[in-house]
Length: 128
Image (cartoon, rainbow, N blue to C red; front, side, top):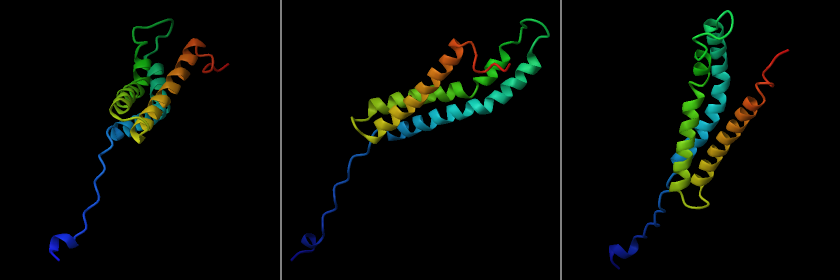
């Protein structure tokens, strides 16, 4: 008996799952975008107080919305891009596709919530 016949053959290595990193990153960016809204709201309120005109509209009314969207907008854009990459690169019914679709779903829920607030004229945010 030779030495080659006594060694067991190693099991075949499964191919790597494409897009799993992008899917997980999309999901993480979607959750962080939602959390970042609570972080930037305080800074935008401070910016609104410091840059608001005494009467009417002033030349620096854009500062508070810019501060408010400074963190959620890039995270939402990254979530969108990474989610699309994960869905396109992965095969059907893989973990990468599920993670990418979940990240895109989290982003879609946030966008619908923002659009409802805008369409309502900020009615939920008004304090009487």
